[in-house]
Image (cartoon, rainbow, N blue to C red; front, side):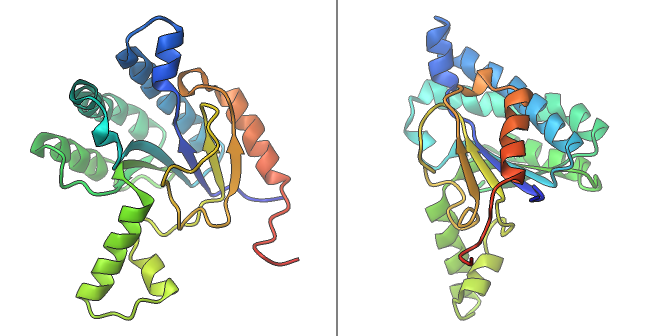
Length: 223
């Protein structure tokens, strides 16, 4: 039976869920944020050590500016509102990606949440923000080159934002692609795709997907 240590989720379908409910896309993002709380709490109680969530990609800047502005405000609100939940459940908060384009106030909120939860010892919740797998690998290579370190697979892995291999990667919303998410870390991940839109995703479905992972035959290239 496999042990699930690192769970990663591509949270897809907020906009489509809102459209189906005849609601503004913003309502889908708001409902999706509530699901993040439920899923994170469930994963923490289930003994998962790391939960990485694809929150905002390097490509998401291409969306209408009104939606991008709303997502930035929602993220700041999320960090403030979720801190008590993180502390209650002994969850450490972290981020991965390039934080440079974010506003000073948002970067301050991210730093505050990280600092406030730094001593928690349970699940680590990682938000992938302004993140792309290609960008992460390129930045890792740049770090090694700047330090005049030979670029080997081990060295490159160690220079990534988060080198922890993914055990199970779930994508909601029906699409069956990685969309530039954790390309290095997911090399031997078990992949699960569900048609459920993220705001409708439940802990019951997560439990079923996690159970299927424990029974998978993971060979890592061997027999």
